[in-house]
Length: 380
Image (cartoon, rainbow, N blue to C red; front, top):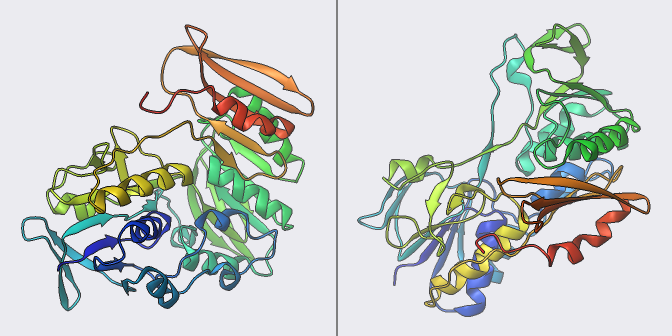
């Protein structure tokens, strides 16, 4: 019997494997991983510094233990060279692996920004546990960090670094932090809250070059200013990993294109998580992954199940000003702001006055569940 093969040992891959095993304990299962295949909480990477967590302390369950828990064969540090959807085969280094059904849980790569300068290759990115270990080593005993990106991950890292005692300079071409998630007034409060920790903002500017100077690095900005730092961290976003699928003739757009059953155009090949585009939606957050994994597990076990996404607010891990956001869809409407005790509630209502999104700051985050119940499901 050919196995079900899952490529990817992140939250999407391992959650799918775990949910599948609850429904089917007999079908052979193989998990392929680019790294050591240990299971850990990736969201913790952007808020572990202030807690003093090392990479070793963040490491969760080993590949050996995961294999035992899942009754699965786990192949660590596996490079998938090619996918043949007609033969239902994967080409690995030194091995051809057949599959009955294939799950692409490939994740995403950090977006790279083109920089000039003799230290451009020293810019750090944190996308997995090994990256975090390199980042921790690079800033050990240092004081100054230049951070490219003021989006969700950038703000989380800025909060964490500042709380850990680092001088943080944030650079972003947008006029305000979290500009894609927060209305203007709410974004201003986030800017000021992180600023109270010592975070310095360079908004409306981009990094052009990183050069080595005596005592560290120098970042040249598009507005003509310069920032001296001991390390530069890029957190400007993620790009779904689609190369393997595209090379196999599977349709890709922003992500690997799948239907509501998470199936690609190739029979028996599915995708979920950061690499997948579900009916035009790329949803790189924890809750969408959990809903998708549960639905896909049922499909893999023989009961085709379409994924349904309820309202899924995103928690922004910025202790300086806790935030919860349910981004509204792209449609006509307007934000309204309401002071709630020591917090702010921002509501986005469409032209009919229906709630379609919200942003909660500070004490108002306690209203997350109450407001989420008022939102329609994603595909509703």
